[in-house]
Length: 101
Image (tube, rainbow, N blue to C red; front, side):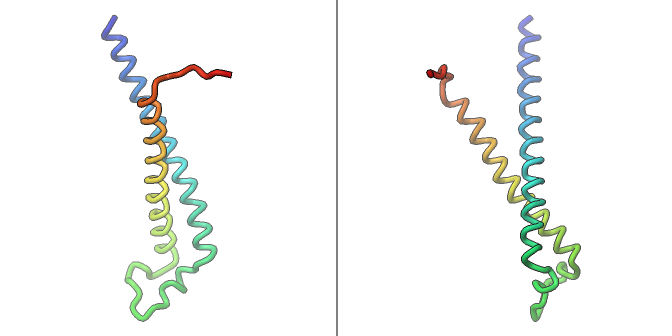
């Protein structure tokens, strides 16, 4: 019976981790979509490469759009992951207190 309880706790923790990871990835994806639209609505990649010596990876707009999107996705994933971690660790440190009304 104790083995079943331990297995259920491990499955619950694994399920919770999957839910947290899914929430982080999905929220950061949506935020990266919005940030990419906003950034490239203001800055055209073609104008960004009008330098004396532009980098070779900035050859066309699609490359700049893709790199910009993945940059924003990485940044928002880090922010969302830290937020999820802080919310999760806060509950573990504080004892459960019933709310008083």
